[in-house]
Length: 241
Ligand SMILES: Nc1ncnc2c1ncn2[C@@H]1O[C@H](COP(=O)(O)OP(=O)(O)OP(=O)(O)O)[C@@H](O)[C@H]1O
Ligand SMILES: [Mg+2]
Image (cartoon, rainbow, N blue to C red; front, side):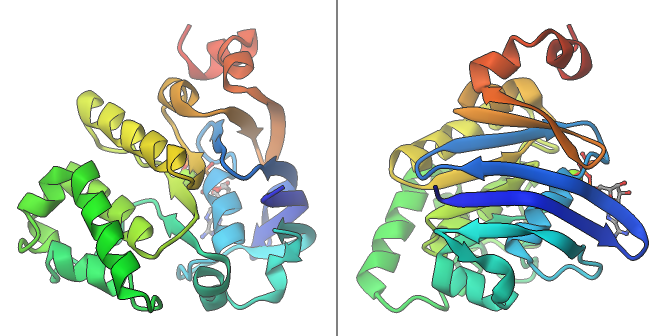
């Protein structure tokens, strides 16, 4: 088991957002978290990765085990280094005044092996040729879709073996959404484990191995992607059928 989340409760001030969330991710999987707005999907990712947003959720109880180690015992900045995990947060957060290449270089700052960095950069530019074409362009002048690719690229360039993504398809045209998920699938086939939050349930379920459905701070359903895709209630609530 790579990641095991057990009975997690988390709150923003007095507002409880997670009411006992449990799920797991196996090494080599793509796992999707789906569910309505406000269900607690982003909160769940933030409690795992703890990228420092201005108002981070506070974990009240429960456990987050990663390779058997209690993640909550570590400082957020240690997670990238020690556990090789990276987050692609909602809203991308790339550096607008830096070029594509500078954004990518910045992501490698904790890595030491320059040959591995070079290989990853080549791999990235093969996956996203458009980023290579635009490597000297400033982040702020990229289109929304290109910024999203850059955000994924940055996660890859940290050398992460586990990537968490929050709504990667947001704001992308349908073709680009598929392209992005195909890249995620390719990364996964090369050994990267993926936990992805996605509003577009149909898209996520097409590429994921397993999925969890969240509702108001709880997991209400889990199964293989096919099981979730064929569940009558899921179809009614999230797949518009
Ligand atoms: N900074 C915050 N302060 C107070 N409450 C918050 C904060 N961020 C989120 N919440 C609340 O926590 C709950 C879960 O929010 P969360 O962002 O995790 O949902 P989500 O499933 O990611 O929704 P969406 O699909 O809309 O992104 C919501 O009720 C939300 O209003
Ligand atoms: Mg969210």
